[in-house]
Image (cartoon, rainbow, N blue to C red):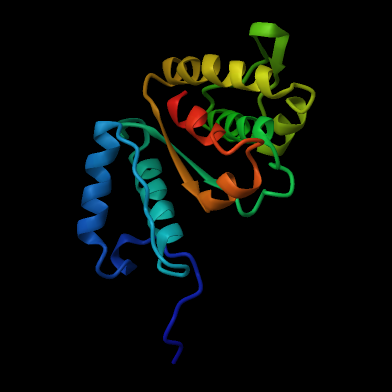
Length: 182
């Protein structure tokens, strides 16, 4: 018998002792308040995030928001600076909206930044590599409300392994707060 499951659990019935925490997360989702889940390694934080994502996706158009899951540990070799953070977030959202048939055609944004949607976030990320940090920040500030209007609901960004985001990606330590306030 194996005492510990190394797999990511996304079935709410298998998240033992987490019912109250999931109910609390539901309240935060509805109130648009930022929330951090902090705990020791292998405690189940990723499983909680993935379960919330799965639950919201399952609700479809009835969900109060569109969940976007981001794992910064898995991409820190290519998302290795501030501009890369914005590219990654935008690329994940574009790919998700393409999959949902919401954003399917070429669009040109301020500063002539063109995005051709794809279901593969890496394709979108590569399109945006030629833009510097200030251009990506400007695009991020412009595009997030544009995306929300397009979808007629906000996004719920699920940052996993965010310590990699803070330690290994931003050019300056205080840039995390710029992301949080955008």
